[in-house]
Image 1 (cartoon, rainbow, N blue to C red):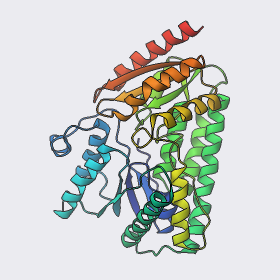
Image 2: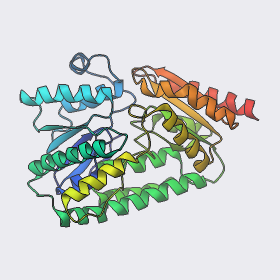
Image 3: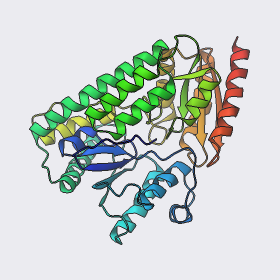
Image 4: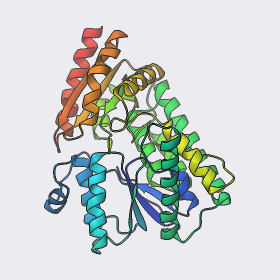
Length: 359
């Protein structure tokens, strides 16, 4: 999912993964740019050999870096939020040391769970992140810069809150919402706000004309599957993956010093929606049930890519809990590297069958 970037004077810092607090990067003078990859496309032999057996979307992210597509970046932050992203980091670190990558690479390791010791570790990780970004941009992060960044990011959070409300009302499609999240993740806040407004103006739908479902499973790097569902009368009213409603965008803290901000952000991190690779199945199930109620979804669809095994372990408990409340779950797992279109077709048939049984 790539959003064309208008002219932006701030240095661009690439982000692989979803754990980087945007307020820190903005305060250190950077524009955070998330690298999403794609559902389909070739993976070079070099990327495949360097990465080994891993999620195809991660391989496409690595391929984009190796091909020079992101050479305009001032630095790259890789989040240790999945096994695939950690493997990408090790490859890129080695290549950066050999001069193959024209910018420095930094690992952000922020475990979930909360608690005093975990939060302290995460806060230190944020301090290291701030130092890395400041070294890339030449701008020192201080309390004034954090306050200015908070104001910019907060406006983006408010816009995405509106996106979520419009989805629940049935007047915004899931694919349009996903494009709004992509703009927020890849552009400076001011540019992202303009892009979101344009999407909202163009992508309104007639209320109640599509069957609302909730999406779980793997993160979606682009709108391919959402658009296929919509063409068959099915709309994604919400999701628990980090390219959509679970994205960490718009979250800010007010603090008198950088150290206080790092601690406060660590506490916020502990309260984020549970992820398949970092959280207990019980936590994921409870969150799913709450989100189904919030969105008013008629059912749940699950799509899991091959070698992205985390979400698969959650599905039996999720299916059982949903069934207890009279909600169906239609799923497709082990989706191959270029199988998005076929998986979407299989998912559409499964959703239609589940809807018939439920009715």
